[in-house]
View 1: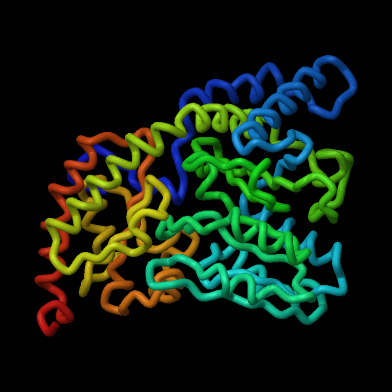
View 2: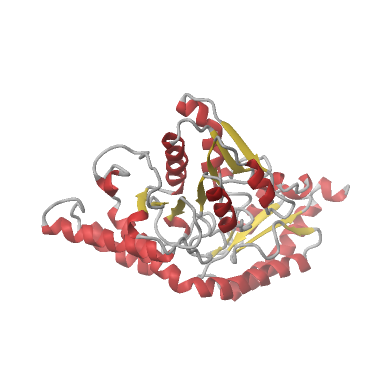
Length: 393
């Protein structure tokens, strides 16, 4: 970055800052409260109680039972654990239903199942509509007697499009199919009530909601057959071996407490900032397109395609002003291929390559949005002046 020391961070779907209150809550567990939460002595026991309290705060955010919360290292581990557990619990079933727009944590696992397990599996990847939404009837029709699990993200990480998870989970349940949702982007941004939504497995990642990196959660509904992914000690009631990442777990508990407090702000203040940014970009810059459903979308996410320019070049010019955003998902950045999500939506090649994802948080403000709206038209105009595609359109 050059030309400014100011950082305007609008890449929160990639990762979030650790909230100051979260950091403050974590610090004692790096120093004076360093006991093992599994130890029998009082010194370790007080740490164990803090882990238990964090489990309760996380469960409260999604209206679950604390016993249904398993701590993991990240959302990817949670996704793998859920899908592999469902397959191992039902070895006679080798069909998986998912979508073409899933995060690589699910998409790449499903494509690797045969080599991982030594068994042949069939994977049905459901298409999406041009606005990123999914057809419920097509989902229902895809479920078979041999289907072990359906895995559908709650909200897309690139476009923010929200899927009808409650309806899909009910359909899966009526057909006797386990249902998993990668809710990494949704938790903390929209209300989630697992007493009402009958999912069997749900994945959370701490660093997407102002907790540190390296901690996640897998929700497993009571009485759901479960086979551990990591075999080891008795931790997590024998469901995930390995000494707990205590400080990060406690940080995640605090982050979930803050997220519950900020849900209204996410869906009012943050949404209003996102809408102002989105409407301003579309009004000020010609040949700019919104990717994703207009309303069935996370309140913080706007994915805009600027036709006839490269997303990587846009990001480099934005970086000169200290503006942080993303082209495609963080897990696929560096690839010159268009986003698999935008390809699945049928976004034209000339637009897919120039897509920028702006993802806001409660720490953004209106001055930052105004600054981005001031700088973006010039950035796009300068790049288009050098683009042979723009000149020959």
